Amino acid sequence: MTDDKQTPVTVIGLGDMGSALAGAFLDAGHPTTVWNRTASRAEALAARGATAATTAAEAVAASPLIVVCLLDQGTVREVLGPVAGALRGRTLVNLTNGTPRQAREDAEWAAEHGADYVDGGIMAVPPMIGRPEAVVLYSGSPAAFAAHERTLGVLGGATHLGADPGLAALYDLALLSAMYGMFGGFLHALALTGSEKIPAAEFTPLAVSWLNAMMTSLPAMAQAVDSGDHSAIGSNLGMQATAYVNLLDAGREQGVATGLMEPMQNLLHRAVAAGHGGDDLSRLVELLRTNP
Ligand code: FVH
Image 1 (cartoon, protein in one colour):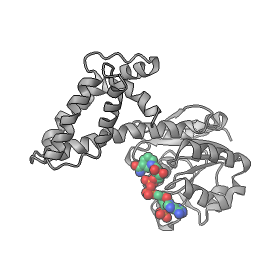
Image 2: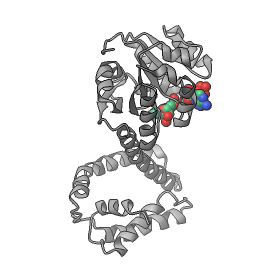
Image 3: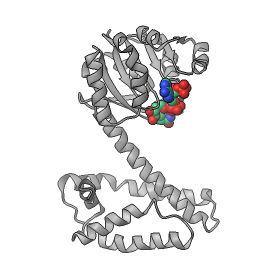
């Protein structure tokens, strides 16, 4: 079926995210069928006009476009395995978090059952769904994506990364890695300042402006990684490895666990020991790629 504002959509999985996805399809006027293991989670959506299927098979049969958002990939197979035959001729869009390998295996599995497969990574939290700030990354069948691009666009900005179904998961997990690195550092910072009874709300504006300033160095760092030229401009690894010791010592002195921060120290010291003390932080990517 070509794309159309009224393309019927089935959403399987009505957790926090699946419910938000189904709500966005309903708000955009799509006939929406929903199914969830715990049936009561469909009630609010049914009150808004969704059709609550009583079985996963019924849900799959209801629409040409099947959007799945379950806890993990094991759950996806558990739910879809028994109804695989019903997927033939339909497009399966899997927005469940998973690895590139899992996405590629799911695409093969879907093809074996005659379904087009598009994998997706949701770069948003549930309240953002349907709003312009939500981004959903897709990869897999270009034809299936093109056919349903406008429908999928109601969830948020839709970006197709390529025909390789593993790409969306790769980008998704890379972006989450960057996010958790930032959150981990911030939580450590709050524990450190909190050890001196400094209110988190008092410290946080400084953290926000510092992190925003540091964010501006990412494109240059990316360029260094791509070019292999890691020449430092003012903040070499030798200096950073020395200063980093204070960061860990202060944690221990203030009674703050240093476990979140120690891996970076190990990397810094490995880089210096390997003779890269004069280089920029970007050099560490090479060490990460050759994890001993
Ligand atoms: N919520 C978020 O902020 C993030 C944003 C980015 C994308 N993630 C991923 O989205 C997937 C679903 O996440 P969620 O937030 O909807 O998760 P829950 O609210 O915990 O809902 C889980 C759903 O999975 C169903 N489920 C779990 N186990 C089974 C099973 N064995 N058989 C059938 N269904 C199962 C669960 O059903 P129920 O417990 O209500 O019966 C929910 O529908 C996830 O990959 C995130 O990483 C969300």
